Structure formats: structure tokens, C-alpha cells
Amino acid sequence: MLQNSLVMVVIILVINIVYVSFFTIRMILTLKGYRYMAALISMVEVVIYVVGLGLVLDNLNQIQNLIAYAVGYGLGVLVGTKIEEKMALGYITVNVITKEYDRDLPKQLRDAGYGVTSWAAQGLEGDRMALQVLTPRKMELKLYQTIKELDPKAFIIAYEPKTIYGGFWVKAVRKGRLHR
Image (cartoon, rainbow, N blue to C red; front, side, top):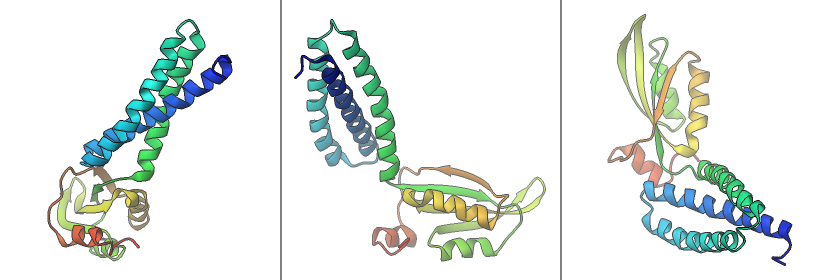
């Protein structure tokens, strides 16, 4: 079966897509602090890697195998990134500067289940409201949509916090009470 060059190319391509997807997920799990899960994935990852690389090295005289390995690597990065987007581990912090000072905006976001801290701010063109909103990454796009509906001219900056301690909102999220 491995003598057929097309079958070999497909096998190498698939092996590398799977390997690099596992590699990407392992790296993200490591960065997010899921050490044990990352270690388990790395054991599977290294077996896939050795098999795929072995197939290529055993057949270096056939350039299509090397090309399949390279294409599989690139596609694996794309697949791994898509998987990570779907997993959406962790939280996102979004800073919002409103166009107008709007006392109702924080309440509307809180009623939607988001953790919101707000304060008065002064911009170039007058009074503004600054908000810091915390949400699980799975809810990030919905949060942007909600903010744009409530204030289409809001200025939005998002970042991923490394560590979060305390606060009623984080405790409620961990207990599964929000965003149902």
C-alpha cells in the first residue's frame, strides 16, 4: 500500500495536519496553564511526528513526499488555529470608551451577564464613560456585537488577562451561573 506514491502523499499530508494541530493545541494548553492535558497531548503528538517524519525520511528520493509534509504542516497550523478558536479557553478583557457619557450602558451589559467596571473619563471632545468588561472568550464576539448595538461609535480595545483573582463575577462564571 505504501508503494503507491499518491497514497503515500495523502498519508504524509494527513499525518502532518494532525501532528501540527496537536502541536498548536498543546502549546495553547501549556500557555493557559493546563499542564497535565498538554503533557498527555504531547505524548500522542510525538508518536504522530515520528511516524510522519519517518515516512518522509525513508523516501527522500521522492520530492512529492517532502512537499506533502510541508503542505500538511501549513494546513495543520490553520486547522490547529481553528480548533483553538472553537475551544476559546480563558477570559478576555475589553476596554470600552463610549462616544457619549451613558449611565445605562454598564447596567445593560451587566444585565446581559458581563462583568463591568465603569468610571467617568474625559476625551478630546468631552465627557466619556470608560468601561472594563470581563467575559469568557467564548462570549467575545457576542460582547462586541452587544457593545456596537448599544453604542455604535464606541472605541473598543481587547486583551487577554494572564491572571484573574477575586471578584464576584469570576466566581459566578466558574460556578456556571452566567451566560446560560
